Length: 209
Length: 384
Image (cartoon, rainbow over all chains, first blue to last red; front, side, top):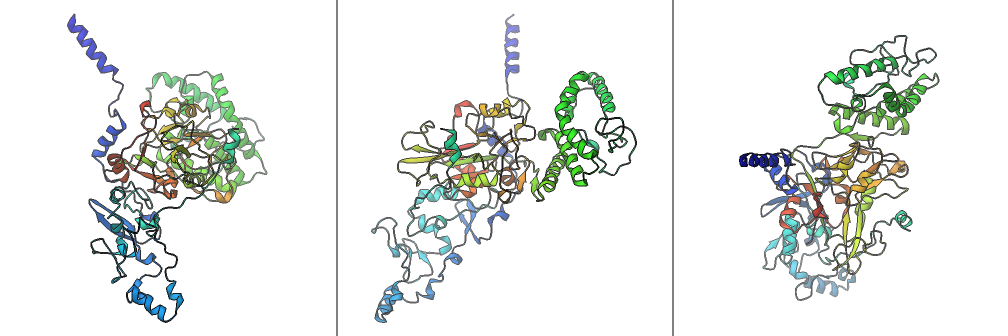
């Protein structure tokens, strides 16, 4: 008798399981299981990147594309003007009473951290204006300027590498391309200004009256 | 392909087949119509009223004998036991369209274009559920819609019927510490998806919420107009979350909405009856209804369309975010992701272990809305 009851219980258990074969108990399980035999679906985002020139970078285990920077800087190469040190240039232009020279980079204000941490020379090298330099004096190319930001903003750097910070370019598929720091943040004034929303829904106002 | 049609085809003589005197497509058996049904070749579904009668009877006979095969198209409607009266009653609504088509076809003055329009209308009326169509049938209905638009508006559109790819499951992450409430995503979405301009329909809502009070939707403002980000507030967006266990799909009485293999929850606008059960079932306010005929100025219409996505809708059907199926299946980011200037929106393939969305899920503290409902949204929120 007991045996019959037991087998009934087992049978009920078998039939009451709602999940069909191939279904998962949770989305997480589904992602893990179906991702195990992942094969590239062969979809490419390359066509959607537009005309931007990119450079490939490898940071940690991640390799992706970022926009090339030097060609986007209007007055690059800097040495076309900065043939001498900044002090020398200022002195000369003062002597020649050429006030226009004083006004080069008049639009740049440094509003980035405080004066103890940041001035022009934190990133720019007076002796090598065509490149940037790290806190320890290593040369950093303008195309890899994110390395400069990563010195202080390490948490943002980790997020950016993984894809949680910064804007993706083109599409979700391969190859991965992402904006680099200076594409959104002005390095001299990295704070992003407030603005007005893109739209206002007047119908919604009427509906909710 | 024509041989495999699962719905009636009204042949208006455009297919250049032989003409045999006798019964007419409009159902009249005697004269004066001008349109003649061609002799039905084998498997051809162009049939007259008498042939339909015999077909129904034959179907009823076969019903009892033949084992169930996959039902599709008109079989879904007609392959059930019913008496002739019920069959005709079910046909009445469709006959109105048919009458229009036949009227045009019978008219001596109507041109080739009008006849073609009528033919397309007829075939669109009797097509099956998109979910059950073969790839050829999907392509055929897309071709008809493109041609119909061309005939009516004298403009060309591009419409695709791209299916889900294997090894793709779309997922979305939203960074609530990055969103600044600019609403660029909303604008981009409206333009991309041809949403009705008159009612200002929007799939995305951006909620302005007070810092330190958590998600309080009843106190949040989703229609603000002041400089953003406002002091002491944070912003979060909602839209269709493309649940993996979507309650909206379960309640649809006609299966006009379903979850695709790549996780997108889509609507067949031509199969939807507008009962709005799905709207009531959605716990996230993800669905929108067309109370009036949606209108988009001709020069603002996005002509890159998908059958399940941003093609032009009609009055009385549901619609919603499709993660821009016309873009995402082609490898592009949805319009909202592309438009967001803050990078708060992250989109990708959940099955790809190297994708950015997977990195976010594995390395950030993510959560979903109303997780306890078991709807399994594929839309995660996170903070820096």
